[in-house]
Image (cartoon, rainbow, N blue to C red):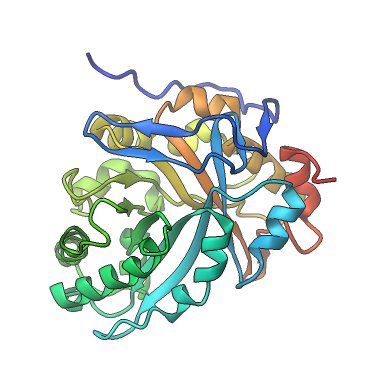
Length: 315
C-alpha cells in the first residue's frame, strides 16, 4: 500500500499541544526499510516530537535543560576533519556532558579536506571516534558532511557530488566494519535547503541512496511567518516518505533575531500540525548560538522566556 503524502495545510499551526518534560510520550519511527529511530524515554517532547539542542559551548546544555524544564533528546556538536589524521577533540571534550545528559549524540563531522581525501582510512578514524561514545553507552546519529550541497559551493568543503558520495560510503562502510559501531551508529544525511528544490539533490548527485542512509533531514532557517509544511513538505515526500526513512531536523532556527519570529518557528517545529502532517517526523535540534550578528537563542542568554512560553516554564 502506498504511504500517504505530506498532509499540507494553509494554517501556520499554533503552540497548542502537550509538552512532556518527563518523556512519557513516544517519539519513535520504524521505517519500511527496517530503519528505526527511538529517543530516550525521559527527554522533553511536545506533541510526540523530540526536542534537542546544539549548544554553543561545552557546559551550556545544563543551563538549557534547567531553563526549559526538560532533558534534551539530542545533543549536537560540530567537528572538522582538517587533515587525513582526524582530531576528534571537539567531540571528546563534551563526552562526559553527553553521557550525563542521556541524550542521543548527533555529531556533525565536517570534512574541510577535499572529499577525495576522505579515504577508507579516514573513515575508519571517524568510526573509531564514534566508538568512543558507543562504548560509553551513548547512541550516535552521525551527521557526516552536513549541508554538502551548500558547503561544496561556499568553500567550506571541496569536491564534486561524486567525490562526496565516495567519502560518504567510505565512512558508512567503516561504521559497519567496526564492531563497536555496527548497528549502534546511524548515518544521518542532512543537506541544505539552498534553492528549495529537493529534486536537485538527486539530479545533482548528492543523494547517497537508501542503502547507506538511516535518517534523513534538511537544514532550514526560515523567515518570519514560515510554516512547517511549506518548508519541509517537498523534502519529506521525496526522501522520508519516499524511502521509508525517519525524518529528523538536525539543526534549525529562525533567520531573524526577532523574538516573535523565533517563538513562531519554535512553535511550528513542535506543533501538532507538524506531527500530523509528517508521520515519520521524530524531532529537531535547535541552533542555540549567536552567530554572524544573529541571535538564534531561545533557551539561554536572556532569551529563555521564548522556549518557556512554548514548552512551559521550568519554575
